[in-house]
Amino acid sequence: MQNAFSQQRSWRSGKIRKSLKFSFLDGIFACCMTGLTADYITPYALVLKATARQIGFLSAFPSLAASLVQLKAADLTERIKSRRKIINSFVFLHALMGIPIILVPYLFKYQPVLFLIIFVTLFNSFNAVALPAWSSLMSDHIPYKKRGQYFGWRNKVLQAVTVGAAFGAGLILHYFKNNILKGFFIILSLAFICRIISWLFLRRMYEPAFRFKKEAYFSFFDFIKRIKESNFAKFVIFAASLTFCVNVAAPFFSVFMLRDLKFNYVIYTILVTAVPLAQIFTIGRWGNHADLVGNVKVLKFTSFFIASLPFWWIVHQHPLYLVLIQIISGFAWAGFNLCATNFIYDAVTPEKRTRCIAYFNVCSGVAVCIGALLGGFLVNILPPLLGYKILSLFLISSSLRFLVVFLFSRKIKEVRPARAVSSRNLFYSVIGLKPISGITQESRRPLKS
Image (cartoon, rainbow, N blue to C red; front, side, top):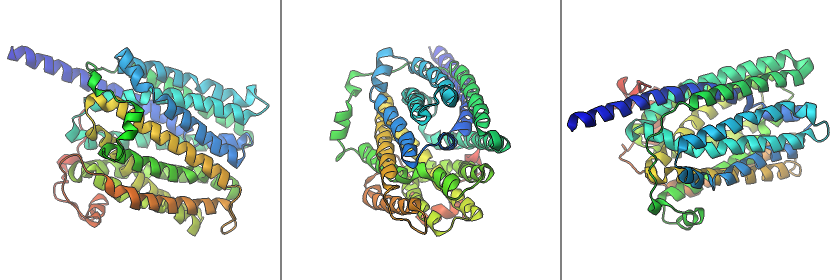
């Protein structure tokens, strides 16, 4: 009996190792797609003559739709009883939506920006349905004590891929600057091919038995009712509120660089890739530290950096200075995004995890939508600051971020054992000046895939 149990456990471990390998390969090509698209959809819209308000819509409506479909994503997963089927079906649809996005300027001469918004909305929505199931599946593969270490290592490598793809996209656009639509056709076509390849690897992932208990069900309105008493719900309110404040300004950084500051695509690419490049060098360290000091400590610490970011764009706009600000941004967002995800994995049981991830994404998506719509409205009516209306928007965004950090971050409690460390010592340790005891070379080694 004991031997049979050991064999079964060994077989399952082998399946999970293979599954993590396929997930990593999926991530390589998915991040190629992200690098080729994420920071270039707004420039694509600007080439199609989008206004600042339409840029706000381009950020708002896809985020809103993606959040609303996730209200039913968990129900769909529980009905089908297979996260793998959900992932494979909707990632394939996500890939297919790349085709009409590529063809917008050729098929829709009238109102091309409107059709771009529609297709990007569908593009994001299909991916959003798959995301909670994928996150839940991955959390089953990784023990909680190793999540910071593993995802820190994984994200570090994949960020490098994203940066490489983004640099490639920028160089292609610069080369085709006299025929910019051809440049966008090339990078968007490459993104489509990469997503298809990533889907092929996703199809080979292993799924442990899906556990669903009726008593684990709770509706979105049940979730909202527990905001005052649930630690997880308080975390969601904090993250969603910060997301709202961020997206008051976030869609307009590209507009500011390309339209107002007249940066070329090479400078633009250097600036937008400075963020993931900084994440490459810091996300692994954040993961190791989070495993020791807890996710909440890192979330609170990095949120202060995030709150200050738009303000620094007001101080000066020289490209070399902005590269430094973008590096700080990457440093902060690396820790925040990693620990926000890992906090969800730690704070909820496996049976509730898919639904909780979906509800978290619903709140975040609605926050993105409202923030982008508000920013798109304000950017046209605000008085100029130092000659630019967008800088007034940046000041409002930074002020709102600080308000959220002070009001909500203190209400979140850590859900696992963690070492008490001062913010100063955490900072010194992450940047390598004075490592905290327990952050050893052994802890920095990645898990084997």
